[in-house]
Image 1 (cartoon, rainbow, N blue to C red):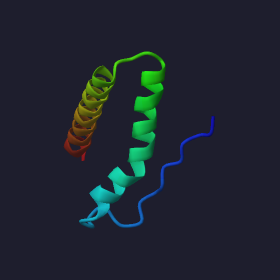
Image 2: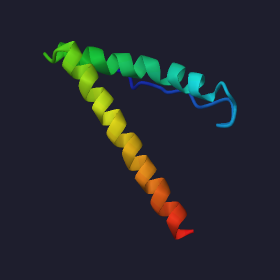
Image 3: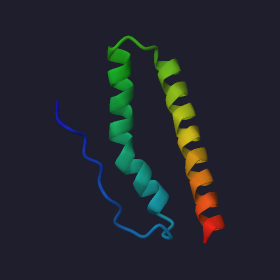
Length: 73
């Protein structure tokens, strides 16, 4: 199985298109992960819910890291 490639950004994070470009870059890998989980026997709704929870946890962990880094500076 080939490794999924994720395209790098072509615009700075301050560009209004950055978010859309990021979603577009991640979408094939995201849907591929859902398909792999379904092939392994997981129910689609549970897979997408679990991915949503993992994304929320990653966002929270990133926010905590940013807050502690700015507090140190």
